[in-house]
Image (cartoon, rainbow, N blue to C red):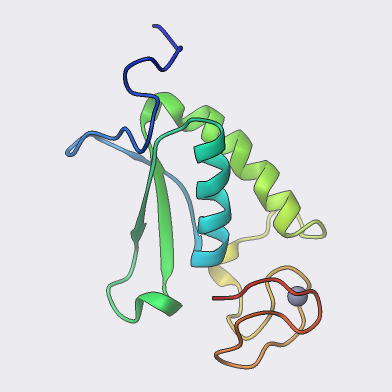
Length: 123
Ligand SMILES: [Zn+2]
């Protein structure tokens, strides 16, 4: 298999109807950071809300093609360690309390756009 990306390695590059694999589900700020890193690595990805209601508060899923899944998982791990350097290995972001900063754990007021403690963008 050629991996020079000459044909499908630019832009989003995903074909509608192609079967995609879930890399990570998390809140949108995290998914956004991960999506940026995948774009830098040239991996086409798709982001979809996992819940229909109140998209700004919901969990989002990031998907890639099966062929890119292994690399995407490696990048996901790097991003996770950057976002939360102190998290335990079995941390599950889907259980994360939306009233807390996901990076430093400080309580954050509802609707805050960034963490007052560490400056992480929350929206
Ligand atoms: Zn914080």
